Image 1 (cartoon, one colour):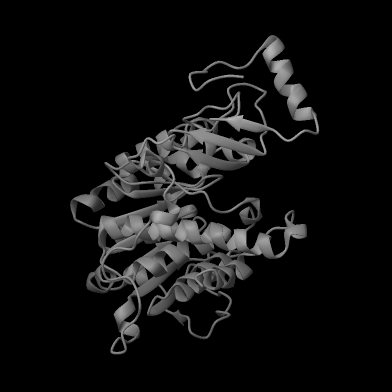
Image 2 (cartoon, rainbow, N blue to C red; image 1 turned 30 degrees about the vertical axis):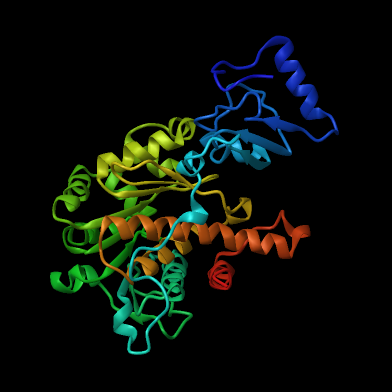
Length: 373
């Protein structure tokens, strides 16, 4: 009904045709993109957009098919480049082509637990110990050599995995220890995480910031400056915000972020000089100076408490096994995001009748390990 150049909401008879098509029982095939959907941003142009069972995208894959509302409206996406080569399609959709950097792969016989990096999980304020435990379990399962819990609750629950080690107040440790470690900070952090952030921002060699750590930084000018200064000292950072957390960091509304997810992730990456994982339908991974990447795996079963903590921990555990560079930060983020969604896809394939049920976060850790097969 509409081409790629459409920028206004469908109105009048056109809107009525779209509504009638959506209300019918016939399956719908969209050509290029569903009418009423923004090709670049994945947002609805108005109140009505075609809900297709399939979308045949021609020449290039349109980013709007894979993020925001696009995934619900595009259905299964097919692609035909019409004989025009050059790999343009993979500019937006690259999960299956995300090759590991040098050094990732099979473990050698002579390696030991010290070969795969240390991860410190800082979080778990009173009443939220489970978030830090989930992140720590995920880091351990992802392959980190040693995983330490640094709880923000003075009387936390004991780890449910005996392999996890307690190291209270790691942020007060000597700077040298932090420089060689990967720190996952913010999972269940509450207000208590604010005090831990200045030394971590200053010294942690690899830093994954999630949840309340992001909220604390958004509310504190000094912490925001500490985050910006990390790149100048060659300290790599990954941020894992959901849309509201990203909005707080950018000083806009969550609706503004969702209206153009690629632009929001790119802007936040440039402002912080960090790798940004903007979570949601069609998670966007952006790095300073690079084209953003959209993930196509996963579904709404991941909309469950703790799934973000699992993702942050897995990113930290994977990243800890390699050099602390921006290149490996980007790869660890993309690979973890894809596996996170792929595990949910596998679970749905095994139990298609349970598509309406959430994937519990503790089960998600094991599902991600199984999805590596």
